[in-house]
Figure 1 (cartoon, helix red, strand yellow):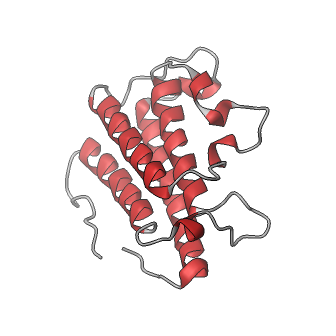
Figure 2: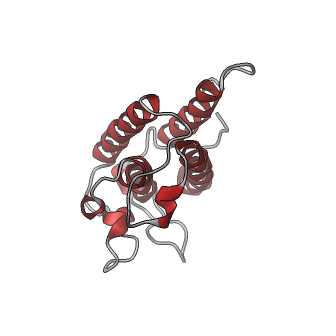
Length: 169
């Protein structure tokens, strides 16, 4: 599979969104062809929630955290990542089909892209209760490239341990 990189010469918005969209595509690609059992199977003994399904859910809610809650000032109560009573609540997906998680992730990414398209990179977050909301949209977008790429790497390793599937992109 070949996934396109952003152009070598382009404006900042095209490049940043291009790199983020590439990482999102790699994340989805790493889940292609997985059985439900493997999508929810833990292969890392000390990280039982770090499954393909758990990572997709985490990435979905991380997009929501940064763009809808911290940047736009939205309600954090609807996001399990803010539930301090349950550790890693955003990764707890027992019984949730991978296809549903991927659909929710895809919708969240579209929403994030719409938010980014409607604002300047120099705009800062609006949520009054979180220090991270003081960051610019540019900072948040760069962070999401880093966060998504980090977990794409996790998925690469997990997929190889699950069924031997390998590949960069």
